[in-house]
Amino acid sequence: MPEHAVPLSGGGRGVFEPFLAALASPEIIAEVVAIAIVGLIGLAAAQLGRTWVRRHASLVGHRGVPARLIEGAMLLAPFLVAILLLLLTRAALGLLGMHRAVIDVALHLTAVLVLVRLAVYVLRLLLGPESWIREWETRLTIGLWLIFGFRLMGWFDAAEGALDSIDLLPGKASFSLWDLIKGVVVVTVFAVITSLVARAIERRIMKIDAVAVSTRIGISKFAYFSLVSIGILLGINAAGVDVTTLTIFTGAIGLGLGFGLQAIASNFVSGFVLLVDKSIKPGDVISFTQHTGTSTENFGWVQELRGRYVVVRDRDGVETLVPNQNLITNSVINWSYSDQRVRLRLPVMISYDDDPELALEVLLQAARDHPRILREPGPVSRLMSFEDFGMRVEVRFWIADPMNGVNNVRSDVNRSIFRLFRQQGIKIPVAQREIRIVQAPPSPAPGARG
Image (cartoon, rainbow, N blue to C red; front, side, top):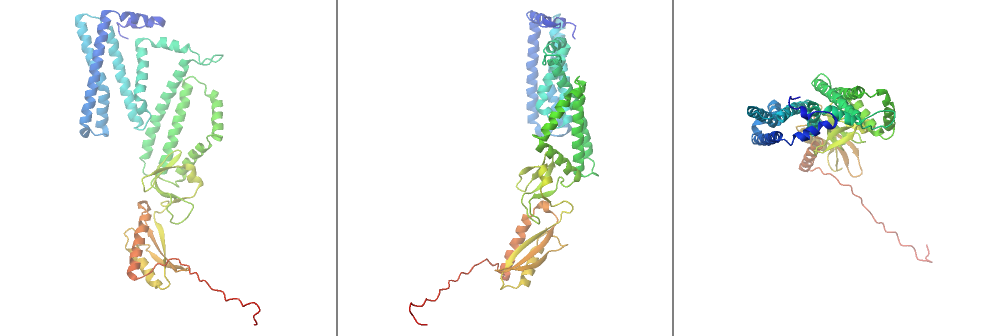
C-alpha cells in the first residue's frame, strides 16, 4: 500500500467517498491526466510491436522458444513502457514537489498487471495450445488483476463483506455469494494444478517407445481424468464444502448415467476397452462392413483414439467420428491387426471357346507386373467353376501395404488383364438368353376322320 494512498482506502462507504472527493483537486487531476497520457503511449507501443512482428514474421517463425519469447515480450511491452513512463513522471513530480499518491497507486497496479499477465501466459504455454486458457486468457487476466488490485488498495475487505451479506440460500444453512465465488476460485485452482500435473505425466508416458501406442494413450487418458477428478474433489473440500453432502448429487449422476447418459457412458467404457485390448490402434487400416474378405466399404486409417469416439480418415480426406461402442458391438475388419499383408482376389469370366490354361497364364502375367504385389507368396490363378455362359477363373495375390490403398491395385491389375486378354484373343462373355418361339401344329377340323 503506497504511503500517500491512505485517502483511497477505508471501509464501507468511506472507501469511495474520500476517493471521489480527492478527484476534484487539481493535483489529482494532473496525475490522472498524466496516467492517461502514459496509457495512450503504452497502447501505441503495443501497436508498433505488433506491426513489427507482422513485418518480420518470416524471420521470427511461429514455433519454438524464440517465437514464444517474442510473443511474451509483445504482451508485456505496453505495460513495461507504462511502468517506465510512470517512474519518470513520478520523478518529475517529486522534483516539482507535487502530489504523487495516484502515480504510486498506478505504479503498483501496473506492476501487479505485469505479473498476472506473465503468469497467465506461462500457464497457457504449460497447458498447451488447445487448452481453454487461450480463449479465456484476457478475461482471466482481468479477473485476477481486479482481485489483487482490490487487495492492494484496501478495498478487498469491503467487497468481501458486501458479497458475504448476500445469502443465496435463506434458512438454516448459510451460503453467501462470497462462498460461491470462493468455492469456484478454489476448485478452479486445484483443477488447473492437477491438469498441469496430468499433462506432464501424459507427455512423459507418450515418449516411452517400449510401450504400445494404444497402451500409452490409455494410461495417459486414465491418469488425466483421475487426477483432474481428485483435484476437483480436493478443491471442493478446501472450499469448505463437506464432500459427504454431495451424495445426493452423485446419486443423481448415477441415475442419469443409467438413463439419459447411457450411450455416452457406454462409449467412454468402450474406448477404454479398445485402449486396453489393443484391437484398434492409431495407424491401423480398418473398414466397417458385415462382409468378410477384401471388401473395402468404409475403408480408412485410424487417426486418433478419443474418449468417446475414434477418428477415421478415408482416402477422400474425410474424417469420420465413429463412436467407440460401434467398434465393440459391430464387426470391424482390421487390415493391419497382426500382419499387414492382405490377399486380394479378382474373378473374371472367359468363353468356353478359349483355352483356360492360356487364360490362367495371362492372369499370372498381369499380376506379376505390378510393383506392389508380393513375390513371396507369389500370385496364383485358379479355374473356379463352369457357369451357364462361361468359365470362371480367378487370380489371387498378396500386398503388404494396404494403408496405401487396395482399390488402386485392383484397378491396375484389372486393366492389365483386359489389355492382355485382347492381345491373346481371349473373350470375356456376357450373359445371354436365347428365346425360341415354337409354333403349335394346327388342330384338326371338326368332323375330320382320323
